[in-house]
Image (cartoon, rainbow, N blue to C red):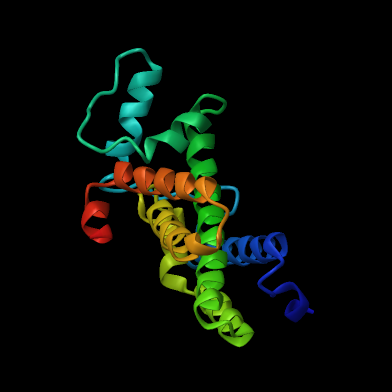
Length: 193
């Protein structure tokens, strides 16, 4: 059944299966840590407040304070906070991170296919990336890891496929993804070099 869904040309089926798989892994992680599914899906630790407090401060009219973190991670949080409560926005961030992780799986598999032109390599890469517990574990953390990994995979995919693309849209989206990656964390500059 999945064999027909997991082919390089079926973008949406690839993303839906990856999103479903990542959601299932999230549920398993929550259950493993005895967290009820109607409880807090997110984990906020050490650096979390450095990314969320400036956005909450901005929404309260106090400016972007404290400004100790790069603002890139705050963009999706800000968009969610404009329409949701803080708690719902944190839950929404987890879902966005799971979706970003699913896109990362698809792009990584498509990159492997582009480099090898072998559908078996595509499927192996897809399933191994999807089932990678370590990366899925961090999807529930309110930190930059999930978005940064997905953005980095997108940048590499866009650069590798650039010669076969139709010009400027690919360059612009790769540049935007790279700018967002850099604006999420200073360390991403060293990752790119």
